[in-house]
Amino acid sequence: MNLKSKRIDALISLGVHLGGFKKNHSNYSNLQDSVEKATVINKWFTQENIESVFSSWSKALDKNQIKKWLNKYNFKDIQKPKTIALILAGNIPMVGFHDIISVWVSGNNAQIKCASKDEFLLPYMTNFLEKKTGIIAFKYTEQPFTGFDAVIATGSNNSARYFNHYFGKY
Image (cartoon, rainbow, N blue to C red; front, side, top):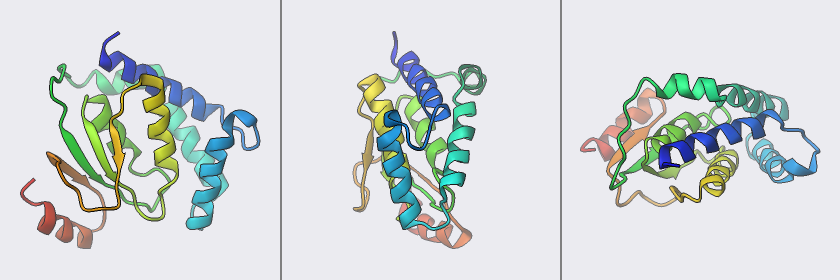
C-alpha cells in the first residue's frame, strides 16, 4: 500500500470514528476529554456544536467524498516532503482541520500553531491519523516557526497584515 492510500484509509477511519462518537462511551473517553477541555477554554464551543462538527467531518471523510475531493488533483509521490507552517484560527471548533489534512494527504508535513482557544481537538485528530498510519507528520508549536517551506494562515484582514509582514517572503 502506498503512502497516499495509507493516508486516505486513515482519513476514512477517522470519519467512521467521528461518526460513531458517543459522549459517555468508553471507546471515546480520550476524545470526550478533549471535548470537555475545549468547552472549558472556549465557552463558544459547546458539546452540541462540537458534536455537530464531528458529524460534518464524518460525512466529509466518507470514502466517496474523499475520492471526489482528491480526484481533482494529480499527486505525485514526494521524495522529500515539504514542511508547511499552519497558523490556524479558533473561532469554530476544528476550523483549521481542512488545512491540516490537505497538507497531510499531499504527502507533506505540518508545523501547526493552533489558536489558543482551540488547542485540544486538532491534536486528537492528528494523533489518530499518525497512529493509524505510523507516519509522523504533525508538529504543534507555541514558538516561532523554523525550518518551514511555506505558510498557510487564516484570520481577519488585520491578521493578514501581520502575516504578510512576517511571512510575505514565503
